Image (cartoon, rainbow, N blue to C red; front, side, top):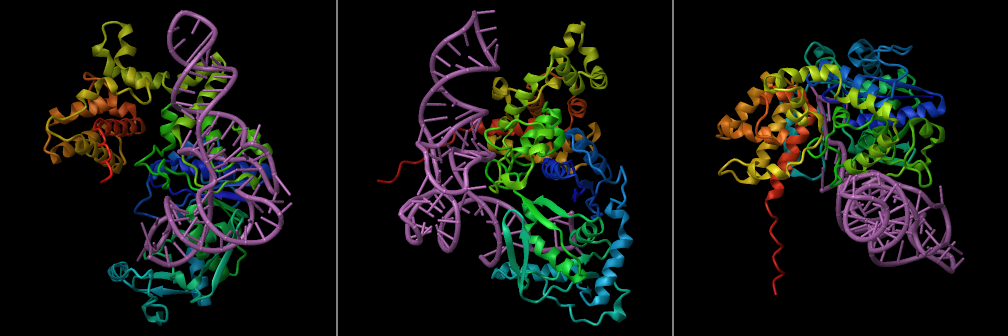
Length: 483
RNA sequence: GGCCCCAUAGUCUAGCGGUUAGGACGUCGCCCUCUCACGGCGAAAACUUGGGUUCAAGUCCCAAUGGGGUCACCA
């Protein structure tokens, strides 16, 4: 029995990846199977070189090691899709030869126009119009093209979801999927199916968002003449409002939870209560205990809301159970370690008269969320409506996020451009950022500070500041019903 | 909009035809106490609606409603 997770290295390691990794890991351990990590880096435009290492580090921090993967090797390698191009090429040729796929020469302009037309008409019919499906492409193989799957034109395609039972879509609703992009790299659908087959993955445990793609995958398995694996779709982690968890509404990076003082065992445990229950009244359990009792019988399909308050409460329980010695080690590893303190010295030294000044000076460097209530009155720019300001701050956070590098230089650039764009002087705008980040009016240099505080804490505090500003606007009382 | 998935308190969940519908977080109250926190005790709070099936429905079926996902040369 073999399972896998297949994250894409396109950004910060996502808490949803940890969630799905947990269930794959526990399932594998409970059944004596193998847990594989595969990196799906076939999108050259989005893949980031440092992101892969961050995934490794984050998953190790959560405590979910893999048996096979790019860094540890294994008998089914390589485990990085960018290193498997020849394999995909070969398999596309097989489909082409079997007449199960075809070359498509449509330009992206044509496809965009088609899509625009369909959305405007909005009769529910969308997707590629199969323009090239019956084309004789033999003379044009040198031209730029993609390869598409020849989907069956009609007829039900069914797969069995182990939690939900049979799920059927009609083939006529699914257009001819691109299998190989014009850059010669495979799309997710192809790479995923080929790799799962070749790596002998027996159970695909992934998030619910993949359900509607699964019929495409099944069609591919059929085209190859392969036996599909078993599919188990976990419910999606949700924002408080119920939508799919997103960084606009929730800290979504695993590193945030680490930096905000969550213990990995607590995060694991918490994730284990999302959509799954231990049995009976038990909600606090170790990884090993989860493995010991694990079955899929206790899955609940309603999308669980990721509630930080509840996570924190669970974390508190773990914290309280630690011996003083262990707790000391955890706190030291978190922020009282030499490297972190050393980074703060440049900021603190000139502002210290005694050693005693250090901690009070930089208390916000050893904190998670700050209490902004005392400084709320100063959290403003004169003449700017709170709602506008709050939105501007969110916009700034997104500008920071768009840059992959978190450095003084980049942060200053973005902040300056942002302030200018809003017609604010740095003198007006920076104090606001400072206040949101530190709850203080006087601090060391803002961007130096942001560097050491780290991306996760900064964006959380800035978003919280925006929220606090929003909250200063009293919501108007609902109008009395007309008599 | 088409298709698909889902539905127990504000939130995470137990329940797998017969229960005073259980636990946890959060909220409120009380106790402990020099303060705060911890801890203890207690309270309020849920089966979306409508049809069936059945002696009996939160539990099975259907529909509606609501929520969500998905419809890329992204994964």
